[in-house]
Image (cartoon, rainbow, N blue to C red; front, side, top):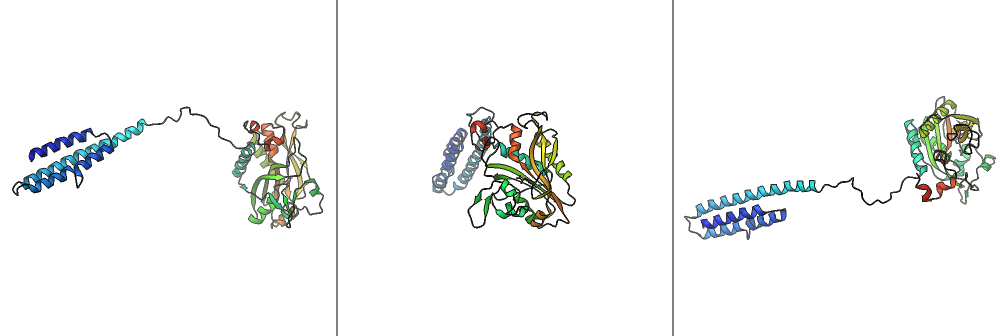
Length: 341
Ligand code: PHE
Protein backbone atom coordinates (compact mmCIF):
# COMPACT_ATOMS: atom_id res chain seq x y z
CA UNK A 1 0.00 0.00 0.00
CA UNK A 2 2.75 2.43 0.93
CA UNK A 3 4.53 1.88 -2.38
CA UNK A 4 1.28 2.67 -4.12
CA UNK A 5 1.21 5.99 -2.27
CA UNK A 6 4.72 6.73 -3.38
CA UNK A 7 3.92 5.87 -6.98
CA UNK A 8 0.88 8.12 -7.03
CA UNK A 9 2.88 10.97 -5.54
CA UNK A 10 5.70 10.68 -8.07
CA UNK A 11 3.35 10.44 -10.98
CA UNK A 12 1.23 13.37 -9.78
CA UNK A 13 4.22 15.65 -9.27
CA UNK A 14 5.56 14.73 -12.71
CA UNK A 15 2.23 15.45 -14.34
CA UNK A 16 1.82 18.74 -12.51
CA UNK A 17 5.26 19.83 -13.60
CA UNK A 18 4.31 19.19 -17.23
CA UNK A 19 1.16 21.36 -17.08
CA UNK A 20 1.31 24.16 -19.66
CA UNK A 21 -2.04 25.92 -19.48
CA UNK A 22 -5.17 26.19 -17.40
CA UNK A 23 -6.98 23.46 -19.36
CA UNK A 24 -4.23 20.95 -18.54
CA UNK A 25 -4.28 22.19 -14.97
CA UNK A 26 -7.99 21.54 -14.64
CA UNK A 27 -7.63 18.05 -16.11
CA UNK A 28 -4.90 17.07 -13.67
CA UNK A 29 -6.77 18.55 -10.75
CA UNK A 30 -9.84 16.50 -11.64
CA UNK A 31 -7.72 13.41 -12.12
CA UNK A 32 -6.62 13.56 -8.49
CA UNK A 33 -9.31 15.45 -6.67
CA UNK A 34 -12.55 14.46 -8.39
CA UNK A 35 -14.86 13.22 -5.65
CA UNK A 36 -16.06 10.19 -7.55
CA UNK A 37 -13.21 8.93 -9.65
CA UNK A 38 -10.26 10.95 -8.46
CA UNK A 39 -7.13 8.99 -7.57
CA UNK A 40 -7.29 10.24 -3.99
CA UNK A 41 -10.91 9.23 -3.58
CA UNK A 42 -10.03 5.77 -4.89
CA UNK A 43 -7.15 5.56 -2.44
CA UNK A 44 -9.42 6.34 0.49
CA UNK A 45 -11.78 3.63 -0.62
CA UNK A 46 -8.84 1.19 -0.65
CA UNK A 47 -7.93 2.18 2.89
CA UNK A 48 -11.37 1.17 4.05
CA UNK A 49 -10.56 -2.36 3.01
CA UNK A 50 -7.36 -2.72 5.10
CA UNK A 51 -7.23 -4.03 8.65
CA UNK A 52 -8.21 -1.68 11.48
CA UNK A 53 -4.70 -1.38 12.95
CA UNK A 54 -3.21 -0.15 9.65
CA UNK A 55 -5.92 2.43 9.04
CA UNK A 56 -4.59 5.32 11.19
CA UNK A 57 -1.13 5.22 9.63
CA UNK A 58 -2.43 4.96 6.09
CA UNK A 59 -4.94 7.69 6.82
CA UNK A 60 -2.18 10.06 7.88
CA UNK A 61 -0.13 9.18 4.82
CA UNK A 62 -3.13 9.76 2.58
CA UNK A 63 -3.65 13.20 4.10
CA UNK A 64 -0.01 14.08 3.61
CA UNK A 65 -0.21 12.99 0.00
CA UNK A 66 -3.32 15.06 -0.54
CA UNK A 67 -1.69 18.17 0.92
CA UNK A 68 1.45 17.72 -1.17
CA UNK A 69 -0.43 17.33 -4.43
CA UNK A 70 -2.70 20.29 -3.61
CA UNK A 71 0.33 22.43 -2.85
CA UNK A 72 2.04 21.53 -6.12
CA UNK A 73 -1.19 22.30 -8.01
CA UNK A 74 -1.52 25.65 -6.28
CA UNK A 75 2.04 26.57 -7.14
CA UNK A 76 1.47 25.64 -10.76
CA UNK A 77 -1.70 27.74 -10.86
CA UNK A 78 0.34 30.75 -9.78
CA UNK A 79 2.91 30.10 -12.50
CA UNK A 80 0.22 29.86 -15.18
CA UNK A 81 -1.47 33.12 -14.26
CA UNK A 82 1.77 35.09 -14.11
CA UNK A 83 2.67 33.63 -17.49
CA UNK A 84 -0.59 35.07 -18.82
CA UNK A 85 0.65 38.57 -18.05
CA UNK A 86 3.76 38.03 -20.06
CA UNK A 87 1.62 36.72 -22.92
CA UNK A 88 -0.36 39.96 -22.73
CA UNK A 89 2.82 41.91 -22.94
CA UNK A 90 3.89 39.90 -25.91
CA UNK A 91 0.53 40.49 -27.64
CA UNK A 92 1.14 44.28 -27.54
CA UNK A 93 -0.31 46.04 -30.58
CA UNK A 94 1.73 48.73 -32.25
CA UNK A 95 -0.88 51.36 -33.01
CA UNK A 96 1.57 53.44 -34.99
CA UNK A 97 1.84 50.80 -37.72
CA UNK A 98 0.35 51.71 -41.09
CA UNK A 99 -3.03 50.14 -41.70
CA UNK A 100 -5.18 50.23 -44.75
CA UNK A 101 -6.56 53.76 -44.93
CA UNK A 102 -10.27 54.41 -45.20
CA UNK A 103 -11.77 57.83 -45.53
CA UNK A 104 -13.55 59.50 -42.66
CA UNK A 105 -15.82 62.41 -43.40
CA UNK A 106 -15.38 65.82 -41.85
CA UNK A 107 -17.45 68.80 -40.88
CA UNK A 108 -18.78 71.08 -43.58
CA UNK A 109 -16.88 74.39 -43.77
CA UNK A 110 -20.05 76.20 -42.69
CA UNK A 111 -20.28 74.01 -39.59
CA UNK A 112 -16.61 74.52 -38.85
CA UNK A 113 -16.95 78.31 -38.88
CA UNK A 114 -20.25 78.14 -36.99
CA UNK A 115 -18.56 76.09 -34.25
CA UNK A 116 -15.73 78.61 -34.08
CA UNK A 117 -18.18 81.50 -33.78
CA UNK A 118 -20.12 79.70 -31.08
CA UNK A 119 -16.93 79.26 -29.06
CA UNK A 120 -16.02 82.93 -29.45
CA UNK A 121 -19.44 84.14 -28.35
CA UNK A 122 -19.65 81.63 -25.52
CA UNK A 123 -16.36 83.02 -24.21
CA UNK A 124 -18.05 86.43 -24.07
CA UNK A 125 -21.00 85.11 -22.08
CA UNK A 126 -23.53 84.59 -24.91
CA UNK A 127 -25.97 81.67 -24.95
CA UNK A 128 -26.32 79.67 -28.16
CA UNK A 129 -29.97 79.38 -29.16
CA UNK A 130 -31.97 77.71 -31.87
CA UNK A 131 -35.32 78.46 -33.46
CA UNK A 132 -37.73 76.94 -35.97
CA UNK A 133 -36.95 77.16 -39.69
CA UNK A 134 -40.65 77.03 -40.47
CA UNK A 135 -41.71 80.18 -38.67
CA UNK A 136 -44.95 82.04 -38.13
CA UNK A 137 -45.55 85.24 -40.05
CA UNK A 138 -45.92 86.84 -36.63
CA UNK A 139 -42.40 86.09 -35.41
CA UNK A 140 -40.72 86.50 -38.78
CA UNK A 141 -42.29 89.91 -39.51
CA UNK A 142 -45.01 91.23 -37.27
CA UNK A 143 -43.19 91.14 -33.92
CA UNK A 144 -40.11 92.57 -35.61
CA UNK A 145 -41.97 95.74 -36.36
CA UNK A 146 -42.75 94.72 -39.95
CA UNK A 147 -46.54 94.78 -40.27
CA UNK A 148 -48.27 93.25 -43.29
CA UNK A 149 -48.44 96.55 -45.18
CA UNK A 150 -44.74 97.36 -44.66
CA UNK A 151 -42.65 97.70 -47.82
CA UNK A 152 -39.72 95.98 -46.06
CA UNK A 153 -41.57 92.71 -46.64
CA UNK A 154 -41.04 93.08 -50.35
CA UNK A 155 -37.27 93.12 -50.02
CA UNK A 156 -37.35 89.70 -48.38
CA UNK A 157 -38.47 87.34 -51.08
CA UNK A 158 -40.35 85.02 -48.82
CA UNK A 159 -41.48 81.45 -49.32
CA UNK A 160 -44.99 81.51 -47.93
CA UNK A 161 -46.40 78.13 -46.92
CA UNK A 162 -50.03 77.37 -47.58
CA UNK A 163 -51.46 76.83 -44.12
CA UNK A 164 -54.11 78.32 -41.93
CA UNK A 165 -51.59 79.68 -39.40
CA UNK A 166 -49.65 81.79 -41.94
CA UNK A 167 -46.30 80.05 -41.92
CA UNK A 168 -43.16 81.10 -43.79
CA UNK A 169 -39.71 79.65 -44.27
CA UNK A 170 -37.91 82.13 -42.05
CA UNK A 171 -36.17 84.82 -44.09
CA UNK A 172 -33.71 85.63 -41.31
CA UNK A 173 -32.70 84.46 -37.83
CA UNK A 174 -34.18 87.62 -36.25
CA UNK A 175 -37.48 85.97 -35.16
CA UNK A 176 -35.44 84.14 -32.50
CA UNK A 177 -34.75 87.56 -30.94
CA UNK A 178 -38.41 87.73 -29.93
CA UNK A 179 -38.55 84.10 -28.86
CA UNK A 180 -35.43 84.60 -26.70
CA UNK A 181 -36.75 87.80 -25.08
CA UNK A 182 -40.07 86.11 -24.29
CA UNK A 183 -38.36 83.07 -22.83
CA UNK A 184 -35.45 84.62 -20.91
CA UNK A 185 -36.31 88.30 -20.36
CA UNK A 186 -33.61 90.89 -19.63
CA UNK A 187 -30.65 91.04 -19.25
CA UNK A 188 -29.90 88.74 -22.17
CA UNK A 189 -26.99 87.73 -24.35
CA UNK A 190 -27.51 85.18 -27.08
CA UNK A 191 -26.46 84.20 -30.57
CA UNK A 192 -28.51 82.12 -32.96
CA UNK A 193 -26.81 80.37 -35.85
CA UNK A 194 -29.18 78.98 -38.43
CA UNK A 195 -30.46 78.36 -41.89
CA UNK A 196 -32.64 80.93 -43.63
CA UNK A 197 -34.49 80.94 -46.93
CA UNK A 198 -35.33 83.47 -49.61
CA UNK A 199 -36.97 83.10 -52.95
CA UNK A 200 -33.87 84.29 -54.81
CA UNK A 201 -32.96 83.92 -58.42
CA UNK A 202 -29.74 82.05 -57.70
CA UNK A 203 -26.36 83.11 -59.04
CA UNK A 204 -22.76 83.06 -57.82
CA UNK A 205 -23.55 85.34 -54.90
CA UNK A 206 -27.22 84.50 -54.16
CA UNK A 207 -28.76 81.25 -52.99
CA UNK A 208 -32.27 80.38 -51.84
CA UNK A 209 -30.83 78.81 -48.67
CA UNK A 210 -28.04 80.33 -46.64
CA UNK A 211 -26.82 80.72 -43.07
CA UNK A 212 -26.90 83.63 -40.67
CA UNK A 213 -25.85 84.18 -37.10
CA UNK A 214 -28.10 86.44 -35.12
CA UNK A 215 -26.81 88.24 -32.05
CA UNK A 216 -28.72 89.98 -29.29
CA UNK A 217 -27.50 91.71 -26.17
CA UNK A 218 -29.90 93.42 -23.79
CA UNK A 219 -28.77 95.17 -20.65
CA UNK A 220 -28.69 98.58 -18.98
CA UNK A 221 -27.35 101.44 -21.16
CA UNK A 222 -26.30 99.41 -24.16
CA UNK A 223 -24.81 101.55 -26.92
CA UNK A 224 -23.59 100.95 -30.44
CA UNK A 225 -19.99 101.05 -29.17
CA UNK A 226 -20.66 97.72 -27.42
CA UNK A 227 -21.69 96.26 -30.74
CA UNK A 228 -18.58 97.55 -32.51
CA UNK A 229 -16.30 96.17 -29.80
CA UNK A 230 -17.90 92.74 -29.96
CA UNK A 231 -17.78 92.64 -33.77
CA UNK A 232 -14.09 93.54 -33.77
CA UNK A 233 -13.34 90.92 -31.16
CA UNK A 234 -15.21 88.28 -33.12
CA UNK A 235 -13.62 89.11 -36.50
CA UNK A 236 -10.10 89.18 -35.07
CA UNK A 237 -10.70 85.78 -33.48
CA UNK A 238 -12.01 84.31 -36.74
CA UNK A 239 -9.33 85.76 -39.01
CA UNK A 240 -6.58 85.60 -36.39
CA UNK A 241 -5.52 89.18 -37.00
CA UNK A 242 -6.85 92.64 -36.26
CA UNK A 243 -9.73 93.53 -38.58
CA UNK A 244 -11.03 97.02 -39.31
CA UNK A 245 -14.78 97.67 -39.21
CA UNK A 246 -16.90 100.56 -40.33
CA UNK A 247 -20.54 101.49 -39.86
CA UNK A 248 -22.87 102.90 -42.46
CA UNK A 249 -26.46 103.86 -41.88
CA UNK A 250 -28.77 100.98 -42.76
CA UNK A 251 -32.48 100.43 -42.56
CA UNK A 252 -34.12 97.53 -40.77
CA UNK A 253 -37.53 98.13 -39.15
CA UNK A 254 -36.55 96.27 -35.97
CA UNK A 255 -33.58 98.47 -35.05
CA UNK A 256 -33.27 102.19 -34.47
CA UNK A 257 -30.74 103.50 -35.37
CA UNK A 258 -29.77 100.81 -37.87
CA UNK A 259 -26.39 100.14 -39.44
CA UNK A 260 -24.63 98.12 -42.03
CA UNK A 261 -21.34 96.99 -40.61
CA UNK A 262 -18.53 96.28 -43.08
CA UNK A 263 -15.07 94.94 -42.43
CA UNK A 264 -11.87 95.80 -44.24
CA UNK A 265 -11.20 93.38 -47.11
CA UNK A 266 -8.53 90.94 -46.03
CA UNK A 267 -7.71 89.80 -49.50
CA UNK A 268 -6.47 93.16 -50.82
CA UNK A 269 -5.92 94.77 -47.40
CA UNK A 270 -8.35 97.51 -48.35
CA UNK A 271 -6.69 98.42 -51.67
CA UNK A 272 -9.60 97.17 -53.76
CA UNK A 273 -10.10 93.82 -55.51
CA UNK A 274 -12.90 91.90 -57.30
CA UNK A 275 -14.01 90.23 -54.04
CA UNK A 276 -14.74 93.56 -52.33
CA UNK A 277 -15.93 95.07 -55.63
CA UNK A 278 -12.94 97.46 -55.53
CA UNK A 279 -14.29 99.20 -52.43
CA UNK A 280 -11.84 97.75 -49.87
CA UNK A 281 -14.79 96.80 -47.64
CA UNK A 282 -16.91 93.67 -47.28
CA UNK A 283 -20.58 94.11 -46.47
CA UNK A 284 -21.27 91.70 -43.71
CA UNK A 285 -23.62 92.54 -40.85
CA UNK A 286 -26.97 94.26 -40.44
CA UNK A 287 -27.19 95.73 -36.99
CA UNK A 288 -28.48 98.42 -34.69
CA UNK A 289 -30.07 99.20 -31.36
CA UNK A 290 -33.17 97.12 -30.75
CA UNK A 291 -36.31 99.12 -31.60
CA UNK A 292 -38.47 99.87 -28.51
CA UNK A 293 -41.47 98.25 -30.22
CA UNK A 294 -39.50 95.04 -30.61
CA UNK A 295 -38.50 95.05 -26.94
CA UNK A 296 -42.19 95.45 -26.12
CA UNK A 297 -43.14 92.51 -28.37
CA UNK A 298 -40.52 90.54 -26.46
CA UNK A 299 -42.08 91.55 -23.14
CA UNK A 300 -39.17 93.79 -22.10
CA UNK A 301 -39.62 97.34 -20.81
CA UNK A 302 -37.82 99.73 -23.22
CA UNK A 303 -37.64 102.37 -20.51
CA UNK A 304 -35.48 100.15 -18.36
CA UNK A 305 -33.48 98.18 -20.90
CA UNK A 306 -31.75 98.74 -24.19
CA UNK A 307 -29.92 96.40 -26.50
CA UNK A 308 -28.14 95.85 -29.75
CA UNK A 309 -28.87 93.21 -32.36
CA UNK A 310 -26.99 92.03 -35.38
CA UNK A 311 -27.51 89.54 -38.16
CA UNK A 312 -24.30 88.27 -39.60
CA UNK A 313 -23.97 86.56 -42.95
CA UNK A 314 -22.41 83.28 -41.90
CA UNK A 315 -22.34 82.03 -45.47
CA UNK A 316 -20.59 85.19 -46.58
CA UNK A 317 -18.07 84.90 -43.77
CA UNK A 318 -17.21 81.35 -44.82
CA UNK A 319 -16.81 82.50 -48.43
CA UNK A 320 -14.47 85.24 -47.30
CA UNK A 321 -12.46 83.04 -44.98
CA UNK A 322 -11.87 80.35 -47.61
CA UNK A 323 -12.08 82.62 -50.68
CA UNK A 324 -15.00 80.73 -52.20
CA UNK A 325 -16.26 82.57 -55.25
CA UNK A 326 -19.58 80.78 -55.84
CA UNK A 327 -22.10 80.49 -53.02
CA UNK A 328 -23.86 77.57 -54.71
CA UNK A 329 -20.87 75.32 -54.10
CA UNK A 330 -21.61 75.30 -50.38
CA UNK A 331 -24.91 73.46 -50.80
CA UNK A 332 -23.84 71.39 -53.80
CA UNK A 333 -22.69 68.32 -51.88
CA UNK A 334 -19.87 68.11 -54.41
CA UNK A 335 -17.03 66.17 -52.78
CA UNK A 336 -14.41 67.66 -55.09
CA UNK A 337 -15.27 70.95 -53.41
CA UNK A 338 -15.89 69.72 -49.85
CA UNK A 339 -12.72 67.65 -49.63
CA UNK A 340 -10.66 70.82 -49.75
CA UNK A 341 -11.64 71.77 -46.21
N1 PHE B 1 -32.27 90.24 -40.13
C1 PHE B 1 -31.55 91.18 -40.93
C2 PHE B 1 -31.33 90.58 -42.32
O1 PHE B 1 -31.49 89.40 -42.49
C3 PHE B 1 -30.22 91.51 -40.33
C4 PHE B 1 -30.30 92.24 -39.03
C5 PHE B 1 -30.36 91.54 -37.84
C6 PHE B 1 -30.33 93.61 -38.98
C7 PHE B 1 -30.40 92.20 -36.62
C8 PHE B 1 -30.37 94.28 -37.80
C9 PHE B 1 -30.41 93.58 -36.61
O2 PHE B 1 -31.00 91.27 -43.24
